[in-house]
Length: 379
Image 1 (cartoon, one colour):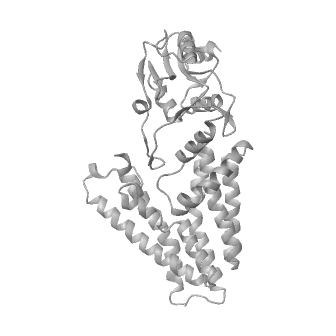
Image 2 (cartoon, helix red, strand yellow):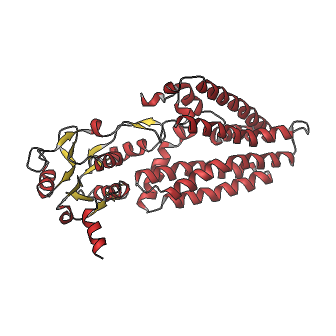
């Protein structure tokens, strides 16, 4: 028991001072800060636990999670907003004066005056490698008048900068509405992912039977939920290792099974593919898909970044490369003209071309000095 108590006294402490009654994605700014503390390895606690110092943040401001993580590793630093208002500090030693000064918004008061002052640009990077985009970290007061703009900003920040054209252009507005509803209803990201997994199975079954319309409805709904679950996890700070494995595992594995099922449906239907090309089409939409993802994995292993983040062309090509959503567009168009077989041929041809494009880019990277293979987004 004594050792537990000692560990508790020396563990980093996170304290929220002040509060706002306005709720953001179903929670207060204080609740959001406490989640950020835990994800940064800082244990939230009452002011009394900060007698020996700790991480202190204002509960009437929204602070980007990246800033909390950065501040947790920089004792003796004060973070100020764009207008100079002190919003968070990592205090070493007695923190009562710092807490009072922070809540009062006085950066020159005792407790804060001696800290190294920095702003968002000095504390957090604008480049997010995981989301393949540049997005300055957010610091903003939370009020009834600012909440809508902050939610829009946080949702936009949760979006990958490099993705397919459907996710980038079609889903943002409806996905933000559904994400807000899920957050307010306390629906978890993993529950959304599981619903998407059930739709994966339904689409596979429908395609296999040649019921393409039902399969496409299930498939498109799944792609929509696949957008919602990740955004919900990021805006509510509830992402987890298991959720990441569950979500990305489904995303990685299911597409070739859909195309295989579509192939089975076509071959049993009124316009089957000729026997001399049918096996090659199946190989293209399944094996070449796997090989294309393998190219991406090799690039990631060699250079520590996604192949689609290397140059502007690569980011543009990610919009249309032979992944699930662009392929679903081809299949949907083929069903609209009553020729699902032609859709499968289009997917096969596009997969071959995309595989070759990635192969060329991989060899071009190998022929480039390693120090120059960096993301254009990080510049």
